[in-house]
Amino acid sequence: DGENIYFQRYERGNIMNDLEIIGQSDVKGTEVLFKADPEIFQDTDVYDYNILAKRLREQAFLNAGVNIELKDERDADNIISKTFYYKGGIKEFVEYIHNKKGYTPIHEEIIFLHATNAEDTCEVDIALQYNDSYNNDIRSFANNIHTTDGGTHEEGFRRALPRVMNNYASKFNKIKDKDKDIKLEFEDYKEGLTAIISVKITEAQFEGQTKAKLGNTEVRTLVSRLVNEKLSEFLEENPQSATQILDKALSAAKAREAARKARESA
Image 1 (cartoon, rainbow, N blue to C red):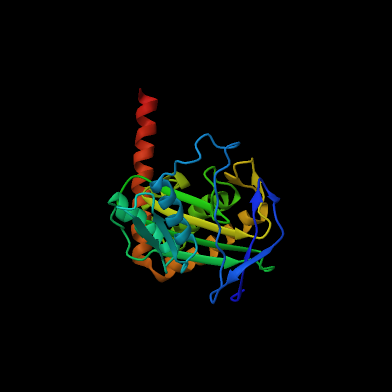
Image 2 (image 1 turned 45 degrees about the vertical axis):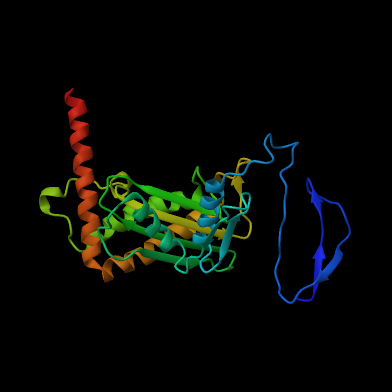
C-alpha cells in the first residue's frame, strides 16, 4: 500500500500462511514470485526465454501503455533484458506482424474499431490492415487469453466484414458491370488481411478447459454491430483505401472461381 510490504504464500490454490508484514516500501505495486509444481510439470527448472518473450510482448500489445520487463539472469555473464511497451496497443501489433513477415500494407492507415456495451461489462477493440500477400493472420483474444479456436467474437467479425464491404460496394457502385455476378465472401475478404480482435468481458464463458474458444453470445452481437457501424464510417471517409481492399477481394474471388471451374473440368 506504499508503506507496508505484505507477504502471502499459496500452494496449489491454498493459502499457506496469514498475511504478514515483512518490511516497508515507498512504492506501490504487486510482485509475484512462483515456482513450477513438480506434481504438475515434468520439468520445473527449464524456462524458454523465447516463449516467455512472445507471451509478454503479446500482453504489452493487448494492454496499451503497460510497461513489461523480462530479465533472464540465469547466466551472470550474459544477462538478457527486454522491455515491452506499446502505446498504440493492438494497432502496433498489426504493424509488428507485417514487419516481421515482410508484408507491405496496401492502404496506409491501420483501421481501429472500439466499442463497449451499454452495461459497461464488455469492451471490444479491433485493429486490421490489408497487405500485398495472399495470406491472412486473424488472431482473437478474450481477457488477454489467445482464443486459438476463435469463438463468438471471431464469428461476429467474420459475418460482419463481408456484409459491410458488399454493402459499401453496392451503395457506391464500386463493382464494374462485368463483375456484378461475382459474389464476394469472407474467404475473399480475408486474403491479405491481418486482424487483431481483443475482447475484455466481466463474465467470460469459455468452451473447454484450455479456454481456446469464447462462448458469450452477446459478444457476437457487439462485435458485429461495431464492425457494421465503424468500418462503414471508415470506408466512406477513406474511399481510396476502400477501393484497394475491394480490388484485392475481387481478385481473390476471381482466382477462387477459376480454381472451381478447373476442378469441375478435371
